[in-house]
Image (tube, rainbow, N blue to C red; front, side, top):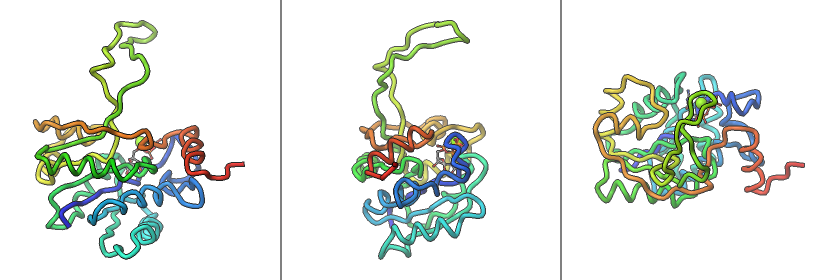
Length: 227
Ligand code: CTP
Ligand code: MG
């Protein structure tokens, strides 16, 4: 396929504190990873690389095969690293030769709607080297030093970055090959390599499940019985 989607699911989920890797925590009868993969497989045909925690590759494969349906032959599972960046690099190394556009997606953004994937792919197809979904920042933001307020920050210049983040494959491969610092997202790494990254509208449902409150919200949204 022309599109490859790297789903990073190798994190430990420290802040969620569910006693095991976050990707396998249930929202309803389906895990965070399974919900994320349902969104991924609703996109047009793509190679899907799932980056799993060490020791959980088999579980990740089972979930991916179930989500893939008749597209199981498009699934690859690899082992992640100790940082997100290492996990993405492991996923990129498993992409097939014909992939030209790469989306990197957090499994933790389990409820991301299909239209966000389409918007990102559309921006790359329209000529962007990279494109990421963003949402306006709601809170008033201050620059602080300890307990001292230094300045207000103009909110109109700020946006919250989500995933899937999409890139031309050659651009992302080169940026990863050159990366030294640890970046928190792929767009920062590609920008550091000198490429312009465009913004497309994100979606409130693409929020990242990070804390217990986020998981509660996800459960409420899918109508899970949390009683
Ligand atoms: N991730 C990964 N490999 C890592 C760290 C993170 O694949 N070494 C993935 C996570 O699985 C998640 C995404 O990157 O889908 C965003 O990371 P985050 O929300 O921080 O998840 P965790 O690192 O698992 O959570 P925490 O930071 O609370 O431990
Ligand atoms: Mg983390």
